[in-house]
Length: 269
Image (tube, rainbow, N blue to C red; front, top):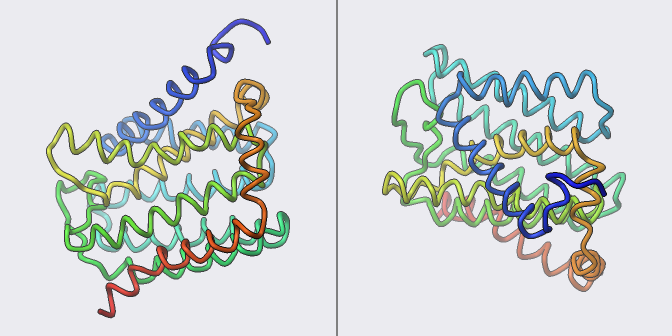
């Protein structure tokens, strides 16, 4: 491999990219026009139209671009924040089922498909939780009341586990290794937000997840070959082979379904 950014020691490269995913997500949330539009709309749109992508990458980027554009409506006062939040949840469910059907029909990961269905259903009950609107015109509308923090965290944890299992089958193990950082980014963003503003707000996870995933999609499409080589890791490959066994997939599915439906349990309790 030629010397350069992707020839950095693997742990260093992984940390740098994870921080890049995190801070790109934060800055595009905080500046929904100045940074969000060029990074999360214009750039991925160029990639979708001009670069060679696998079908799922193209589909995922397309749906993410739509939501990033819709952000402009509440930002300019053209939509109520609560309405926008419901739209976000609908698109989240759509994105989950996109991957779920890919798991079912292409990857034959039927247990992970069941987890996807539970997560999509969980979005329905998340919509009725107490959303707190803060700064008008800024994408900090996606904030949960503290009373529902535990249920929300359970859902995000289920999503994180499910999504990584999906990635391990859809892409090479090296890309799955990188996605550990991608999936960590929203949680790191929430932690950084707390350290700066002294507000623990797990609700920001939604916006940070969408933005970090979009930025990851850009890098993954643009530099996939380099990433696949840079993150080759025998330990990760062996671990992925182990978790593909039914003896692992079934209990993970059960745990994921329970976690994903905690919002329903809280709603009806």
